[in-house]
Amino acid sequence: METVQVNLGPRTYPIRIGSGLLSHLGPLLRDHNFAAGRVAVATDSNVGKIYREKTAATLTTAGFDPCFIEIPAGEEHKNFAWLSFLYDKLIEGRLERRSPLIALGGGVVGDMAGFAAATFQRGLPFVQVPTSLLAQVDSSVGGKTAVNHSAGKNLIGAFYQPRLVVIDVETLTTLPRREFLSGVAEVIKYGVILSPELFSLLEEQLSSLLRLDALLLTTIIKTSCQLKALVVEEDETEGDYRAILNFGHTLGHAIETATEYKRFLHGEAVAMGMVFAVHLSQQRGLCSAAVKDRVTRLIKKAGLPVEIPKTLSRDTLRLGIETDKKVAGGKVKFVCLEDIGRTRFEYLSAQEIVGHLRGGSQ
Ligand SMILES: NC(=O)c1ccc[n+]([C@@H]2O[C@H](COP(=O)([O-])OP(=O)(O)OC[C@H]3O[C@@H](n4cnc5c(N)ncnc54)[C@H](O)[C@@H]3O)[C@@H](O)[C@H]2O)c1
Ligand SMILES: [Zn+2]
Image (cartoon, rainbow, N blue to C red; front, side):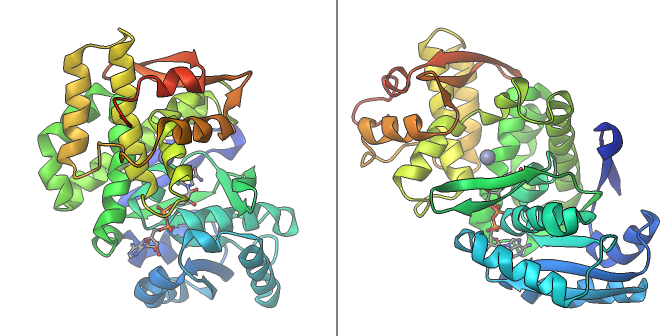
């Protein structure tokens, strides 16, 4: 088992990473001083179907009395109606201020249960057991929790750190392939913006990663969590520095908006956004063609999309960039690449950004 410590003063917490850890969740909670008794486990219909029994068994054996709360799977359920359902179940389940709430699932469950934990009785101890690669390498560090509003994604939320994160890499064997690759895009992002070592490891061992080699997965998830932790420790509440994590996301979000979050998974949109970001960086003379080619090649080799669909016009994408909440004073803080592991912010208008799209679209 590997551990990454997220150092946030009194909100410091560990991430435990390994293969088969879900079967030891009960003892792990006891090791972290959670008293036996009532616990709530929020999950979704897909993850619940596969892992509920195993989770119930380890919790019960360790002296916990779990109450499971199941939400239908899918981003469309990350809303007030299902949050309210979560609160109802926490009340029915007689959860008290010291009873932990465990999120067992992908980022949707994690974000929603995290927000419920932050607000129910002004705060329950929160434990994350992320089961998608995206949630393991992204949502388990940073303490962002949220639900969607009809006016926008993640519009209502809070920063609320978990007390413990347990990552069982074995859960990735049941994750749909496309979802797995979507998570790989975020892993590639960490390599590109923060770590030439991680980037080279991905170049060399991509096929083992895609075969879900457990040891390699553990190393890569650990490294990704460490890298994100370093950024978050520097800037817990999204001041300046944390914005580097938006690499590939400016255009990625615009693509997601333009296709109404239906055509692409988040990581797929980010993959196209990263390819565009290195193209823009090269065109503006910030990075070499060799760097651009290396990044593009790895993303392509991972089976992620690199070409923006021709059907998405410059105007549509420009509008998408302009409506992104990160636009300030007409300029977007666009994350450019100078070299693998070295970024720099450029303040550009949406018009200037889409001016770098090739031909009809890219
Ligand atoms: N809090 C943060 O910092 C943060 C960071 C990134 C993303 N997010 C949020 O996370 C969400 C996306 O997360 P996601 O990609 O995990 O989506 P998700 O939670 O919808 O999971 C994707 C799909 O995989 C299924 N699934 C998850 N784990 C599985 C497993 N082990 N076996 C079988 N099926 C499994 C889910 O049921 C779902 O159908 C978005 O709402 C996004 O806003 C939050
Ligand atoms: Zn992302």
